[in-house]
View 1 (cartoon, helix red, strand yellow):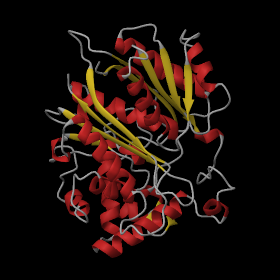
View 2 (spheres, helix red, strand yellow):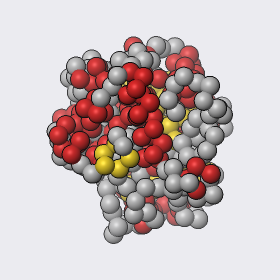
View 3 (cartoon, rainbow, N blue to C red):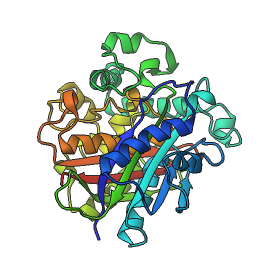
View 4 (spheres, rainbow, N blue to C red):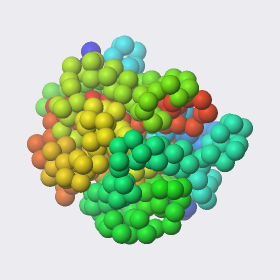
Amino acid sequence: MSAWIWGVGTSNFGRQTDKLPAELAWEALQEALADADVAHVDAAFVGTVFGSLGVAQRALLGVGLAGIPIVTVENACASGSTALHEAHQAILSGRYERVIALGVEHLTSLFAGPIASDPTDREQATGLLFPGIYAMSASRYMYEHDATAEDLAAVAVKNSRHGALNPRAQRRRALSVEEVLGSRMIAEPLTLFQCAGLSDAAAAAVLGPTRRGSRDVALRASALRSGTSWDHTSRHVWGYDVVRDTARDAYDAAGIEPSDADVLEVHDAFTIGELVTVEALGVDAEGAAPAAVAAGEHSLGGKTPVNPSGGLLSRGHPLGATGVAQLAELVWQLRGEADQRQVADARIGLLETMGGGTAGLDGNACVVAVLQAG
């Protein structure tokens, strides 16, 4: 049995203090169910990092989905994509036929600044939060590959251009290099516009077996790994190895190579994250991502567009919802429904989400998925 994406939906992204998490989920679920042309499913997998007790059940009850198995998963920033992976595996194993993957997060009701997922973690207890971790990765990357502050800023500029074309995005203004570098310093060398902001949103997808005469998109493969012990024997920056290894699992399962991808949605919570990720995925050689961005290869109209949605930097990064939102963007791209940000002739889409946050690990979890137009 193969697995296909029947329908997708998302809420808008941004600071939505007037809406409850379940209300955001209802928007995404209603759109996904209507897009799939179904009213019922056999089970649901729900990704959330800071969701309150029962948020999954409240969300699904609101669209009439009660009495089914509901599994809530937390895997840091990869929570939503882990829900997608588990839904995919449940279909492949024959456990269920129709499954919903849902991601939901309401960060602005919990945080006013950098997220500390667990103050008892020894790194976070010393103040080493995500901006600091990524800043150290950026500094190391710049040293190893002679990259510049302008190279990092170029990622934010590119994704802001894409985000300006996305009506659901949180940040919808194209930025210049000067604006990015001139924004407030958060953790050197990362400035404010190089960091994804707090966001509230939900995203949903309905998965099922092959149907005839539809707009369904094939989920060719999905792979999930957790990071290995981070003992600094790797010559790569934090997060590179787990993305590389997870990607190889997905490529082998799908029977593709990185060069086959036409469009990518990757985890760019910080600008350095996108540069490291496209290299770990094998799309660019080590140290070559800045030149590819500068040449326009990863922009709309370029050789391999990356984050046409605007990415986490511009669309928003509501943790548990992010992975499923990445999926929704790729489905729209592969159907030819992405409007002004459409990637021409896109047939193969690549999704990557990596979550960190535990001292001593090279990332909590990573999911890589391969999609193909029907």
